Amino acid sequence: MSLLGQLLDLYCQGKLCIYCVARFSFRIGERYYSQNMEDIINNLFQAEKRDVVHPKTNCVICFNMSIYFQSDEIVERIHEALKESGHIYEGTFYINTSFPQAIFVREMALCRYITRTFPSKNYSPFRLKDTLRFILMSKIKDWKCELESPLKLTIEFTHQQLREDGDKLIEISVGKKRKRMETLTSTIAMNIIENIPLKIFEESFTIPPTRNEEDPGTYKFIFERDYIYVGGRYRKYSRQLSQSQWVIQGKEMHEHSITKEIGEVLKKYFECDEYFMIASGREDVDVRMLGNGRPFVFELHNPRKVTLPIELYAQIQEEINKSPAIQVMHLQPIETKDVDIIKKGEREKRKRYLALIWAESMKELKIKDLLIQQKTPIRVLHRRSLLTRERMIYSLELHPIDGHFGLLELETQAGTYIKEFVHGDLGRTTPNIIELLGCNADILSLDVVEVLLDFPKECRPEKLRPVTFDIPPFITLNEQQKQKCKEIIN
Image (tube, rainbow, N blue to C red; front, top):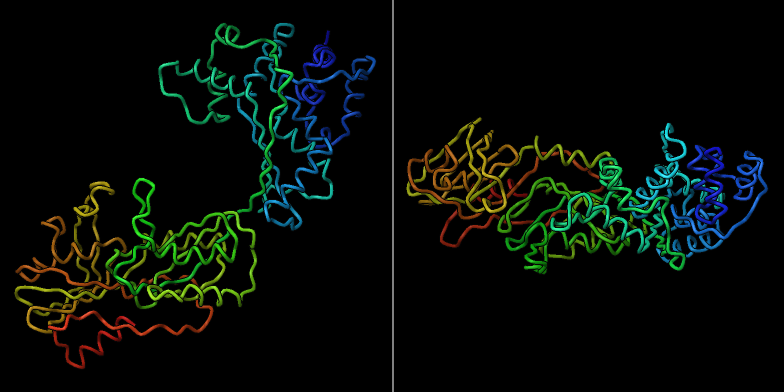
């Protein structure tokens, strides 16, 4: 008997669907699986010169997924899922199928069964994922399937018997007492299967595999769209607002954050499920972000609205800017390829700062290209690895203003800890302002006044809110000093 003949015997017994017969007899390619199911049946039976039969199928390999994928019901459910998702089909989509990876166990069991008759054969069936996609593409011909389409349809199939097969596979691999894997991926499944001794495999799994006829399994249809990106620059006026949400044990410690102030408005307009902020660095809660603002990008997950009129971005920006704590400028759509500008800039950019400091003995300083060594600051040591980082202070100017107080202007390499550069962090940053002045010193307030990164491009005239430098009432500035501060922070 031939290989195809043996597979057709299993089909006639109702144990294999005709598509799995084709897959295991080396029928491959989109053209083959785009045929009508009846044509495939006729083709295979004709190849063996046998009379066509139509048994009730209860496929022990794909659990009748292949047959379901060529049914009218699946087309109806796809259209229903699209409508419920809120997405719109815009000319292309991509099909992704998800099923328990324990199906590979069953494929291997069938291969082991076949090799009892054909021991010299090296079996590698045509992929089930590709088979299902080709069948479905032929069923919904008015929809175009493209790999790079931003609209993705995921069809998830689950079945209790396959879950049990997966549990048994992991148990064989890691043992009962060891902690189980959370996810059985295709790579892990295949690696386990390939390394199980034949005797253990045959003792653990039925060859050929069997199936519970009463449980058809369940299907779930999910439409999702690729991320889109929206970016701009923000100024932060509050000294009590964090950049990201501060969550401890699942509980938000503060109601507001820059991420939330901007993200919730974007979520409303783009109708996305979630959002994630990528910023060009971050400032501490008690540090203002002034000047031309900090570049940022929002990654919007599964948006229902993708392309908005460019004039609507000004309206979105205006709504965000109702918050007294922040101001957004140049809000605009961002191309995916341009998101890397922020990530690269994180390593390469420079920043300018203005700080108010106190010293026991204040004096003027002007220094260029000062190389410093900074150990991870004590205040962030609980969440950062202990390293010594080399940072460049490109420009330092300290101007005495009133007694023990001075204005410190800095231009530094990205990643420099400014507060620690002033007070030394118990000698963990060297040199520091204390060493340069030769006396005790500390920082009273700090503003970021410029992030030197050309991103994004200016897209509209912006009117910035005027701000003043925080000077305690007991410190007196002359008019020249006041004007200097105004120019720096605005």
